[in-house]
Length: 338
Length: 207
Image 1 (cartoon, one colour):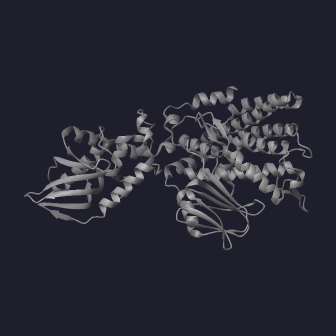
Image 2: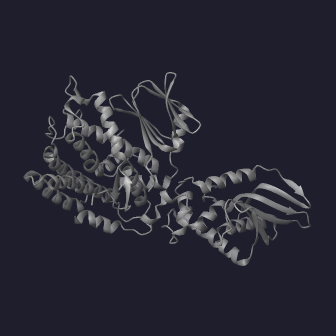
Image 3: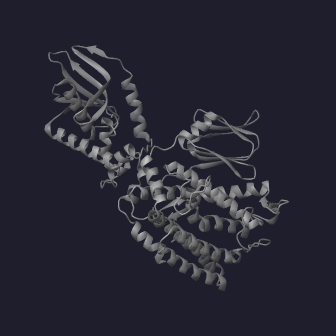
């Protein structure tokens, strides 16, 4: 597996990024803030009023360095894409299989299975570390049933249904995994999230979704056409498909750790007039800094049989999906915790 | 109609000879990854191709010569073609390579493919050629014999078949070749040499 490179998070407002030979220069006004060799960078995320020179955009596209723009609050705005990959055979296969119910479900049910298995692993870890809790144990057993059910799912719709039930079951006990003061989880609420835990989960999910979209584009797949998630204009369906495997072991575990270690506190959130809860600037910076560190931790990938940086997991799965579509493997190998 | 079949370039044949999967990854899947070997090779060829035709002691040197064979459906650009001023003229292909002379055939196959094109284009016979190995600054004479022609024709045939099928073969059995391959991280030979997805999925549901 390739080595993970660094991600640049640009949050200083009115920064300007440009290319100088093979380096990325960050300036604010006349002041040069940093100069970094491009070869060390795999991703640049810009939050808020950040300008980027078109030549740097072109260079990033050419070198496969992800470049994306978000509002200061973290709402996704745009992504720069270089020349599209020339692997048309691959994309044709993706579209053909996405239109074919049998091919779609053969992949979709494995993605859902891994999601359920990973959610179950997170709950079982809680039982191991913090002693037996009745409702968590019950959820672990129920998820085992969901896992068996999805093994034989014969349609994408059925897989989605099993996934929905499993998610409800899991979110029903997630509160038991929270030991931090001032944080309570009463179920998943989005659009908008109306409590801090949901706000953090949504933010973490969206960060991973965009990493998945970049990884998919990087290997020549179309992130908008999925097997589990159906087409919806503007929706990164395949990126959302990939996200399923990572929700519990990566996003949820990270959010729980941040809360339980009191790294994130209730004062790191603002509640808007409409009820939406968001991280403050300070809270978001803290979250992103910890996120970046966590991405560099290594985790064992059971199919590659080597330790890879967590931040490379989207690339790993994107690659496994490509090789499956190209006929190297009989089944798509989703990421699951062993 | 002109582009019924994907053109097979002579420079692609060395990839096929090195590893059929590498050939498919580059020419069907359009992946490319630069590593030290290929980057240096690129620079070397730029130096060579930029020359003009020279004339020296009865031998004319032409660089960047476009060649093709309709019979074998291959085409390419030669680094150097030496033409002796006899009657009829003799044609002597020279290929420039970054590395060292190798036991294996893949450089020689490329040279032989060039010879086949010249033979067709000029209705002549090319019995010999040479490869210039930059790393050791040595020119190695190559005899375009029957064995080499046979291997080259097989390589050309296999290449056409793979291009037509659109299928990427599994990684080569010889793991030594993977070490120097610039596509190692795009191919992941140890992961895909054998398909273990079946037992992996069993593990997912078994737990």
